[in-house]
Length: 162
Figure: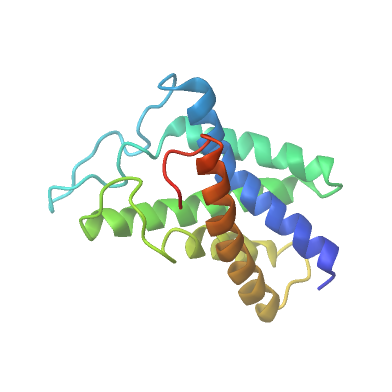
């Protein structure tokens, strides 16, 4: 895979995952309706939790294609990356709730891998990615997210330093 294309894909994955966080900072509680409708499962825990909102998913689905076009990529790739990143994030939240972890608590690997692995696998439909590219891209994203997250916390753009 060409390094520039991989970089652009990782930027899209980062944008898809960052837009809900940015929206929360800018909008506060406006439009932060829980995606799961506050459903509680038999285990007594929420399906996803209050931090997964309709606003967050919509902002990712609308903003990531715009960034894709600005990068010279197809808008459909932006939608695909955003949708699959959100699916990965929701899977992580679902698993964390089942494990009894609080919303926004850290679960190293679980917080980074699905939200990058899913979009890179999905992107294989539209761009030439090998399985090695997917694995390397996922690792790069996970490490980068941990570093950038600490920087964003210090800049008061993130609530927690992970």
